[in-house]
Length: 490
Image 1 (cartoon, helix red, strand yellow):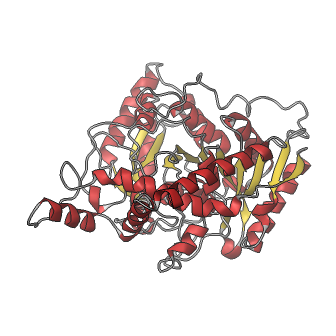
Image 2 (spheres, one colour):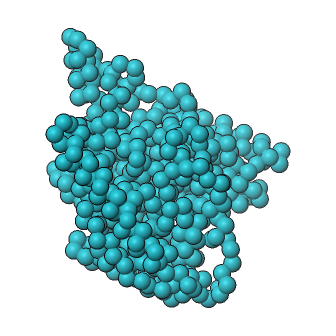
């Protein structure tokens, strides 16, 4: 059962082929066996999960179950979850038990899902490898000597290792798509504002967006149906009518032999230049050729400001992080130093002890670019570049339906390979950060394997609130291939 997708598991529960309690116990047993090495979970709530599973079984028996009732899932440890630790992968919140649920969590609870626990992540979502977590680095299930990507590496690893059929994640500069690519699963970053950020502890408020990890595009659409939509508690939430993200992918194609007939695939030339590993290039090209066989048409496009995305992102994101993380001062909640002489020393010692090196580095950068004399030179200039990058995307998307390219320049690298070179780690986000700067939706789908038998992900980028069409295109590709069904031998 663990090899079956979220969609098939939901169908099996509805048909009575298996109970939620049996399914939940299967996943909990697998987590107990594999998590000590993988470190995909920070918190496992076995007792709570089994109680929720029993409630779900009772609801189904009474004919009250929904599509996701009884399905076991997990949440990235950045989403506040009532009664459970919410640590953000940091010593600062090592003992913080949330008194409330994030909107994403409460909506999935209302859908009847069972919460297995909270997944590991880079500290406060800052990182591309999941190595900055205070609770230890998550390992890639395909090769435990390699990183799973980040910051949602624990979520991606959990789905890849079949520790859960679906897991939530967050994406600030690629933190869903990049680990999805490195772990060989499907990961979706929705349009900014499509998913509520209320209760999702902030890194960079104008860039953060929650989304799902699962085996397939169909699974991601199923998850998105449950938790997307307007939330009056989030001032950045888009006021739009409720969508059915499954509507396009479940519509029968006019020509079953050419299900992508008429779809225009934009291929940005900047995504295939220097820095892209040859094994990744080959897998991406093969995926595009496969989609052309399904009837799609390739269109060459350009995103000329691509090389400016990294510097713009690493000014804007740290600036917002500097502001957001100022609340962790040792006064109201979070880590407080044991000994201090006065209030200022308490602030300084608590933050120095509570935050790891990567978080401290980004706070320092953000504080610098917001300081007097540098605000106009750096922060305002980065905001201007952000507008130009968004304009580039609109020009490209006027010529095509989706943009295609790599989600990461290489397959997963060895643990510790970039520990002493943070700039090199930042450059690994070259294909993803611009999407967050523009606020567009994008997803990564498995499309092959590269060096060392490691997964490669194909990134699809759509226009604003065009998730349904983008997911349908990914679904047609996945119907014709089996990359998304493959899992590591564990």
